[in-house]
Amino acid sequence: MVNSIQVNCNSLKLTDDQFFQLCQDNRDLRFERNSNGDIVIMPPTGGETGNRNLKIIQKLANWTDTNGKGIAFDSSTGFKLPNGADRSPDASWIPLEKWKNLTPQQRQKFLPLCPDFVIELRSPTDSLKTLQNKMKEYLENGTKLGWLINPKTKQIEIYRQEKEVEILDHPTTLSGEDVLPDFVLALESIW
View 1 (cartoon, rainbow, N blue to C red):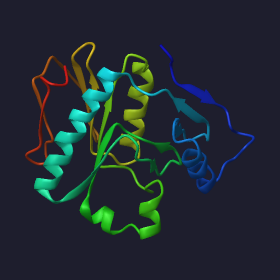
View 2 (view 1 turned 135 degrees about the horizontal axis):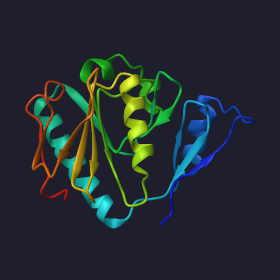
View 3 (view 1 turned 45 degrees about the horizontal axis):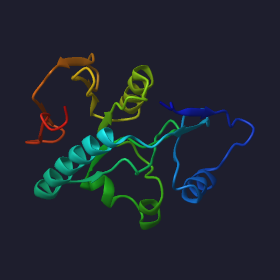
View 4 (view 1 turned 120 degrees about the vertical axis):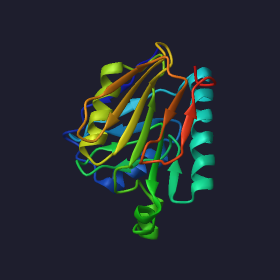
């Protein structure tokens, strides 16, 4: 198994446009950048994780189309968080108002905001601690609800603003609560 690689880029000081171009020029690689400017190179996922993520995104996209009050994104979408990090959650959602407030140019690059809702799906190569730190970073930058899904242990960690992390063992469904009203993710196909 190949874990992600973190490259110290303090001497490079890539601008946002340069980092975006680096990502565009290397589409076979998946990059993130932490708030210190270090680049994280992540390996592609395996078949099981890719299929699980597709099912999650499909269900979120279907709900979004029916609800009509926001925009959903897949794991290829980059977000420029307020702390300067560039992150790509496995699935995410923002209210329509946030989308409408972006310029056409902003919509073409990494979105300069933090999603209201994020999902991180743990793959066999992911460090749990790294994912937990990312979830905390999302909350610190404005995410209202986040799910860290761990298929291996069948545990869900639910992250909410100003609340302790809630851990669920072997749940069958997850609720979008007041962030994604009436969204329910059935987990039988994810496990």
